[in-house]
Image (cartoon, rainbow, N blue to C red):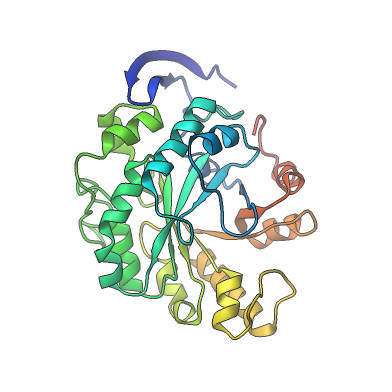
Length: 321
């Protein structure tokens, strides 16, 4: 493997000093999850109880060296506190880099509104703009029921000068405004100009570093799952067993074995993701990780570092992970 590189410039900014790295022959992507998914390597994130991580600087510092590739920052049911989110990202930067050489693990924020319809999503444009300006690497939309609402979600996450899917597809021009790039670029460790170039959605933009996720997690979303999964700009979807089970009349269904109707819903979302060429997220355990990988799951939620370690061995992921 060629030498990864030579440091270029050190800049002093709001998060303290940070370095911009130039690479020889190969480049580490900013978003570790995209880096792995683009190589068809599964991504692993930890689950602490229900939901995901939340907290400020100390929590970020604690998780900077996590074994996980991806951190889910929970804002759906937790407090919507962007100041705390910014502090969390600063803690990750302070405690980094990761063993794999990424500045931080990838951070995916779960948004505090749902994809019920276009009006609901559009009214929360400001939420997406503020969360992305905090320097996270992606955002997830819950209860993605309406294909038009999902297209609007993609629109909210994009800057207007990124044109893939707009000039040649069904998307409308992005709505993110100028001004949020300074802080986010400091978190990412690049210049504001470079952030503007790379802050776009993957895989629609192959150079994009923002990952958009969906929760197709109720019977209304399920009806449109195939169309929703094919929305340009979406990178992954999950089926949300708890909410899907609740919607289908089974409270507190989180873990298998599932009732037949719930299992069928899971399979439909999995197949919709495969057909659309995007990643599917599901729970992985030490007992099922091999089966899940063979099935096509590419984002694994797990409480067990051993499950991630086994999965990495099975797919021969290069070390350090």
